[in-house]
Length: 101
Image 1: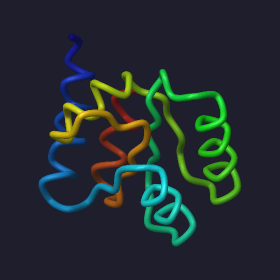
Image 2 (image 1 turned 135 degrees about the vertical axis):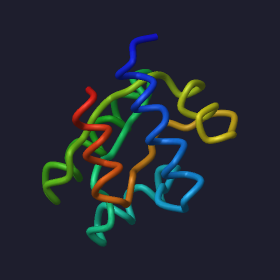
Image 3 (image 1 turned 135 degrees about the horizontal axis):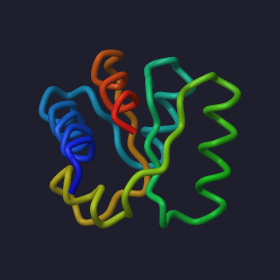
Image 4 (image 1 turned 90 degrees about the vertical axis):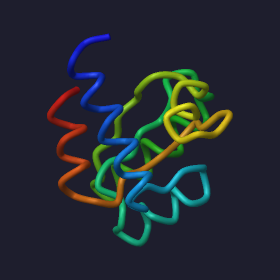
């Protein structure tokens, strides 16, 4: 695993522990709409429909959109089974993720 992936994973874990992360489709979309999301991360193996929904919302609300890891790996970072989508609600942590992609 490259150092950049470790930094991204660390930022995601830190955001979760600090309560600065939302996960799941409904919570992520709500954060985008209310202007609380600073980066949206969608699993690379999410369905095309899910990717399109988040990409369109992110484009409309001008939120950075990235595809990263798979649903199982994203879930493990959060202590859950699977997660197709998450968003970070802290500008600094979001920027850390974006800088290391």
